[in-house]
Length: 127
Image (cartoon, rainbow, N blue to C red; front, top):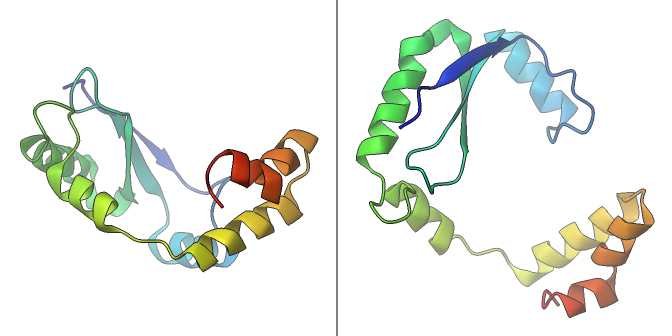
């Protein structure tokens, strides 16, 4: 396992951040700064992000990463409980269609609009 490097973030200032502004205000208003770790559990595993209120201290993040390390699949490096939940989650086709339609409506670039259009989704096997 790579050594985690943590950073405290007081407020998200990054454009394009995927968070609803009202929710961000509630979370940051209640908890203040957040600590974020990026880590891998094995050489071939994906990069994970762990974020939590900085008030819990760096050791809380290190303990969480340690627990995930113990639960990882030896072949793929993915925590078994997370893999189970991700494979069992079912998104209804109506919700997927709604998300695609709304993404298309809000897309600014021609490339995004092409991919998220109905023909683009059909080509990708999503409709």
